[in-house]
Image (cartoon, rainbow, N blue to C red; front, top):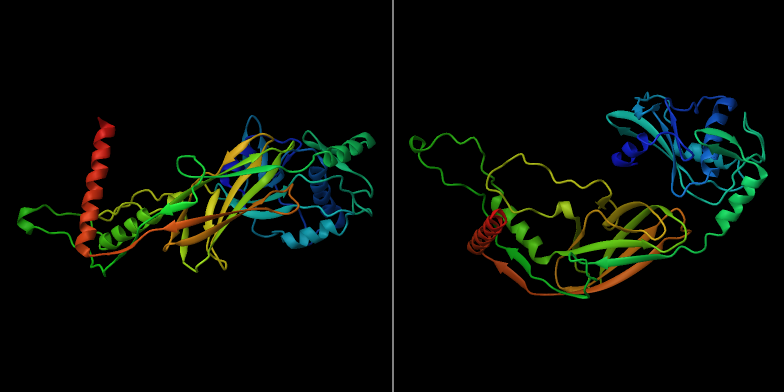
Length: 387
């Protein structure tokens, strides 16, 4: 799915060679050949038109200059199945066309999006279908669709075959933006069984009613906070594009393996445990911007990061740091896969780090001391900042 921030940017741009709005969803499931050919022609035109990144066809949007496009709620009936659309389009072409069809919610309304990445052109039908002619290359000129001239078709081939090799630089950094070290010293904490937290309550005649509920998990949250704080390794990834062309829809996938079978966890920066509070409160829930996440549904956790498009000479850094929480000392291997529309196969980078350190088992009293010292330290920092 497209991030809301990207959709907001697109609806503010207005139609052009790489962007088309449609107020309604195309007829497809029970449509005639002529109706289906309108969708086919628009996809081909977007694919054949020069654009450095992705091109988009947004359904459920009506152009409203000079304001952002109006978002219109599409009906639930008539949703298009992506696999059937893929088959419908590609069975008519000489060369496979890569695109993606998605339906999602935006601004509380149902919309549909077709994303067409930058790829070698041209695309055309081998046989006429509906209103789309065979051996004819359709392109977008501004906000309208036309037929490419022989000279335009020639330039497509020259441009797509003179790009050269994709050249990427992936930097693996620490929180100080220095190259990540190969060795780390960490402390691995365990705690005895912890009781529920109960705050001292003075007699009713000495105190006004307190409407804040005590946090019964305060001690357990404190233990989790210190366990993470003492073993976390913070990692920043930075990707540079040294190619002479833009890379589009870049995605980084990060996985870890431990050579000794040790367990580990991966988090995003916003998921790192905060210092515990002894009262329940409805504070803001930390959330990222949607470009980074840890997917734990598969055989092993995967840190996914979407960087979007990176222009020649540009350097992009992931929005949130990657947090590794090793369960104990050992050797850990990080594998980063770089995917982009212009890469035939993902580029893979591996790094091995060695984690050393002691495992300490703490008592309930020692946990209380840690919490008191941590609170005093944070109050001192706050006073210094205010002063």
